[in-house]
Length: 108
Length: 141
Image 1 (spheres, helix red, strand yellow):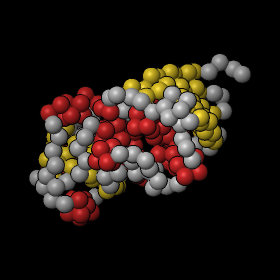
Image 2 (tube, chains in turn yellow, brown):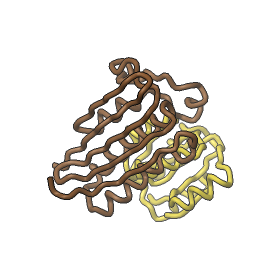
Image 3 (spheres, helix red, strand yellow):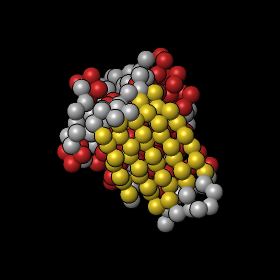
Image 4 (cartoon, one colour):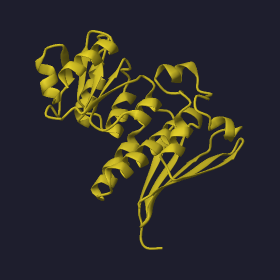
């Protein structure tokens, strides 16, 4: 399943879509950045409620396929611009992290 | 020793929004050098944790990455307060970070443990009131 494929369902909405054909190979959920750094794998969709600019560095370093902001969390315009400039896919989801993971489980 | 490729960075202690930029650049540079992805991942995670530590605790510092024939070496130097108790600082979950830092998603007490976990060698030299130098190596073979 690609990031574009995930968007087709309509539950996930793109805030920054720069590499839509990126394949999602797994899922990681976490809000403590060091924890995510240590555990998320390349190609994961990373579900979090954190929306500060540091998530972009974590996503770049762990090589996540995309960041999914749950609970309807969104990014500021400035961080959205930075995400696009850094080539990081960021999506938003209105439900909880658990609900996002359940949706992904059905799709992956 | 044969010639090495070396990258140097100044880590800005004032600007949290820039934290991690040096690690992202190192990741790109190592990729261009054709290093294996897992090595790049380990180096960039260890360096990121060190970079964040320097911003949180030491008001910034310097980072240097050297690519040797058999390993990648990361040297992080700061002139911060020093680490009082290294053994305690190495414990997962122990952190002296403030609530503000924690609200940004840092301060989980995983920084130093992650640095050790992702490298093959780590040495900490610290002096109270003078600063800390951390040297890490990730073997290439």
